[in-house]
Length: 263
Image (tube, rainbow, N blue to C red; front, side):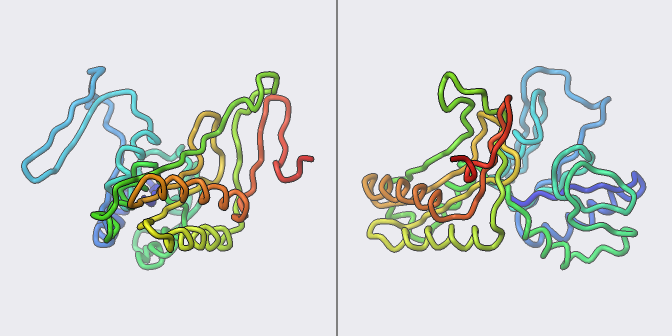
């Protein structure tokens, strides 16, 4: 799922959201996320969901963060527009002079200057938001999914301690060799797909700041049987770590270091 934040003056915000939504809805499934007005904010501590006969749904409740919401909708949406959350770390389409805490995807002098084709090209160069469930969903749409008897997965997470005596790791920072990293990862997937009994292989590695306890890398394999699927998962993650140029910086309470520089 690709995320795009919108930052604009109040007079332009809804117009810009509508323009982007009208375009992106022709490119794939779209979610629009915006804050509830305070007076309409639900008071209950539980969640409520409404679903009509056409499958349209809405929900309200409490205790949900933007990241948790992204995780809930990533499986069923290709794009998400987020407005009213200028403090979120997202790629932003903005009107010049509007502040936000993310990266600049495109800055306009006015709403009328929006080039949706150029925006679409830029948006599709951003890092997608993926979860294990969204990757499994991609795998089971394989043309040969009806031959598969196994889905094997690997999830790598940021551990706080390598050893009980270590200083705690607060987060990891990942950078990639853009273009090369994606090509290497796809080559590994392609190689594994050629094996007998393997129908689909998908890999995803997060980039940027990943906090301790959060997931960072996924491998999903759709196979005929568990033995082939588990072997492909193991070989896949081992090759990813050995061959894909993704660089890791470890931030601990007592200092930080790039892992590849440490003796």
